[in-house]
Image (cartoon, helix red, strand yellow):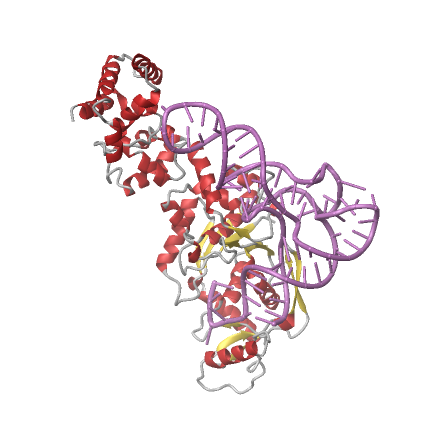
Length: 466
RNA sequence: GUCCCCAUCGUCUAGCCUGGCCCAGGACACCGGCCUUUCACGCCGGCGACGCGGGUUCGAAUCCCGCUGGGGACGCCA
């Protein structure tokens, strides 16, 4: 039987890192098995779901390259199916209307909790024969009263729950819309999902869902509850821990492949390997090497992975990711008209010096900006009257160069240094400041070469004449 | 509180299933050194963990039990 999995986020906010990892593990599993990956939007909570959120989720998935084969399905468009299934349970005597009000339930819940008991529905309406005319009601699932449910989890083995721990859960709200535990069962079954891969915060929902599978005569899928991602303080990852939305990382200058690589290694491993191409990830992914313990999100490690990808991504490809940041940081104007090939020119000399694309964009300003912006301190320290003769020598030397190559530039600099009896730094720094405006830049020969003869002579000339 | 899951360096992890090769390996971070025209990259070295207690066994990080600790669930949220 071929594999079919799904990622089913609820559109009540942005797609966060934890969700991305769940999506990723599903995606990797599907791709590894040559199966299908379905995207389903769990928007049954009308009051909290937003269209904006759906769009952001889709954008995040696309940015990360997590392509889906079916969907996105929206549960709000499948109401008929759910109503029909509720009806089926009602007819079979496996569900019943409940007239208890939310207030009554809240009260009972808090009383039970106070008494040290597990808060669960007390079954008031379970065998009720009188039907209050016109009173609003929800529909509850009539769960078995005793026995146990064995959830067979691919990662954790058999997990046993006592049915007395469970209660009659609401499957349809007063307004007729279905609730999570019910739709998830109906959809996973209707869509032919073979493996339910989700966060382990859902593990305790699973026995209820299993009962529903049974009541509906559905075959249970294979469950895999992966561990959750925690923040530095070991609590569930949330806004308190800083950036948690996928797109926030895009905006901070992380590469989608780096994000994927980092997240894949959180809970999964393949020997000692740290860096994986997508193909390798797909090829090696297996639940045999997935860890069951929770993992803490480590921004430092992510940063390192990002650095590795910045170093190894081909310049032209990197340029495509870099471009939006060049615009956003104001280094380039919108509609600059530069091609990826042109932008890619700065990459080789900067990809060893930037941890993020934002950093790279900022550091490439010297190349893209027409006017050099001088750092006052640097200017005062290095562009002195004593340094001007040096600059003039470089101008003369550069002008005389037939072939503008790294080798020739280096030879020229070394020659000047020797003639003047200076350390290379004494020459390199003033030149660096004159050409870039700052004391920090890529290697000086790289800068000269990148800027080109004409531009170098222009910038040096400006300083000499100022 | 009740139920469920989890437990190797600060962090991600290898090893655990199929006990000995592990006085526990790799990576990030940190510290020190080297390289060097700035900043980085890189290279070399260092620090650093099997939560605790009982078993089982000739032998346990590996198997069993208990404890402790952490996380999650207990909604007309998902």
